[in-house]
Image 1 (cartoon, rainbow, N blue to C red):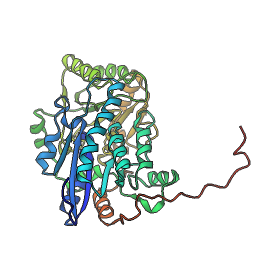
Image 2 (cartoon, rainbow, N blue to C red):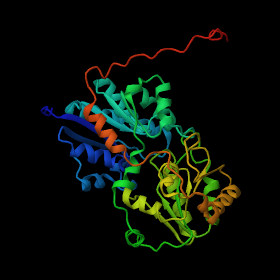
Image 3 (cartoon, rainbow, N blue to C red):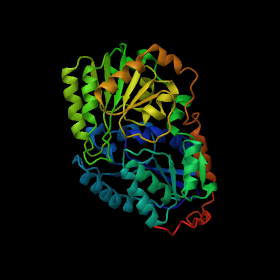
Image 4 (cartoon, one colour):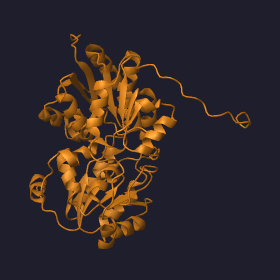
Length: 397
């Protein structure tokens, strides 16, 4: 067991390229704070070569990795997801027992995050959670996010509406802080690549129209790829250059990867990227002509570039969105029509002056300020909130 210091120990869990890109600037703030001893616990897809071995990004950025939790089962089914949670719990139980942080920081809604949250509850470690109070009804992420919210003791929401929703779930208002989405801090604080630098990094020339595609399994469905057929049929017919990024490590992801490779083998000007670091991905959002798929980045991050986004199917159903998003069902003709609309100069012109509802890129400052100043005494004990006035219909069935 490591020796305690007078500094506040803050552990941060990261499972993949997606959450690490959101956590980068909060990690920077915490690493630079003189009163913080920071520890990063990396797990899941970070350690998987088939998903880009993204642990190397954390190493390159110089953050202190205290544990590498091997837990991801690449079985491509929901049983593998369930077992991944169990394996992660075993590894994290030892790692967090050894270091005993004062606070544990979790983000978003990945199913793997249930593992560190469960361990922290048993070890009586207060949990801080980023991006609670949002909705994505087409994925089990929605249930995971709500579970993490109720297990957490400090909350950082991406929108004012999300803050109200967390409070409506019974959380004490003083615990719930509106911060904005920390991924947007890259736009304000990171130096993005020029078009020429981006093309050199990707090893290609961007040609119009350039479409960015990001598609993930719809995990609320028994067949997580039930909606994928319509998307791939559309992309085979779509105009221009297609840049495809890998899916999340969910049930059905390996089948999606194979389908993407098959598309690239037959469709000219199709490029696949296993992993793009945050700066490269953000730079790409600023240089393509439209985005298509079911990724939250088409809603949360694309809005900062006023990038037209065709959001397909049910995965992001219920999530707050700006006017750059065109929502369509998973039907080939409808998706094609929406892509045509998204690429039109009229639609692009209509997005002038739009504002991203997920914040202004200052989330990391708020997150670090609260985590370094919140009183730890009594933080584990939540006070019940008043019940609404009892209705005479409450007991009628």
